[in-house]
Structures are given as structure tokens and as C-alpha cells.
Image (cartoon, rainbow, N blue to C red; front, side, top):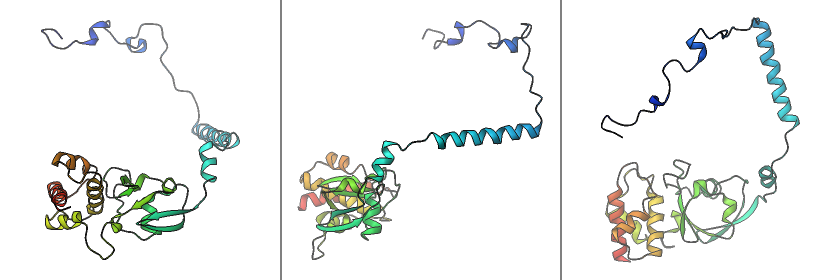
Length: 226
């Protein structure tokens, strides 16, 4: 950059049109459309489509990904909230779909369905994951905890759940299951987090109502009571 402003790359090129046809006078014949009838044009389009479609069918082979999918054993054992379930799972089925529609654990919400909002958050061996983008077959041998498995067997709420109620954290409530699971996972691994650590741990959960400070205060309150 000089005193007259940022560098202008156009100064490196000569003046005049960049295309010879536009400049004219160069002895180049302008393009002329082919004299093709409408009937012949449409016939050519249809025939070319048939040739392309037929060649893709004739020369296609099963890819390794398709072969792997066909080879997946559908029946599997899945441990959720301390119970083992034997379920028939499709090769491309996600954990969020399995827990909601096969096991009936509808506390896990499927919001964005592309691993961004965090409403589907569950724990796998103590670590939070987005169940909407995790294949169920990858969860073999892992201990899955959903929001239904957070409270005590007698119904007593976890300190995180109780603190969220007292801090008026849930608004519409759609993100609340994921917020609860994320908060519990944080305190399980770090019982005495700083506010910044709690903020980072909860940052994977989006709240459409904007109640982030309420959830943060709830986590910090639960940490003091555990």
C-alpha cells in the first residue's frame, strides 16, 4: 500500500478488451449458432441422457463403503442407563434415533440433527457426545447415560437438575436435557470448576431462549452443593 491507497492489480494489464472477439478487427469470425431444428435438438438431449445413464449402470461396481454397510450385524446389545437392551439397529442409524424411537427415552431431543445445537447430548463412558451424529453401532460396549438416567432411582433429582429449577434455567425446555447432561458430566470430571471452565464445558449447548447465564449459575450452584 502506498500513499494513494491499496495496490490496484489492473495496472499490470494492457488497456482494451481481454477477449479478441470483443475488440473486433482481428479477423476472427464471430460465433454462429448451429442450424439445428428443435426436434433434432430434443432428440439429441434425450439420447445423450440415455447413454450417460446406461453407462453409469453398466460400469458401476459395489464400493467398499456399500460392502461394509451390508456386512454390519444389525442385532446388538446397547447399555443405556445401566440396563442392557438387545436392539435391531440399521447400519446407518444414529444413537439419538435409537434411544428415542426404539428405547422410548424421549428426553434426548433431536434438534438441528447435525451436531450443532447440543439438544441430543448424552454421555458415553462419562464423556458427552452428540447422539444425533453418532452411529449406534459405534457404541458397542460403552455405557450410555441419557437425561433419564441422571436422577436417583427413587426419583431424587441430581443437584444440577435441582439447581436449574431454582435458577429458573429452563425456558422453553428444549435444550434442557442436553444442558443437564453436560452439567453433570462436567461435575463428574471436575467437581469444583471455575466459572470460565463451566462456561466452556456448557458451550456445546445452544439455548434458543438465551438463558445461558441461568444455566451457568445453576452449574456453579450445584458445584457448591456436591
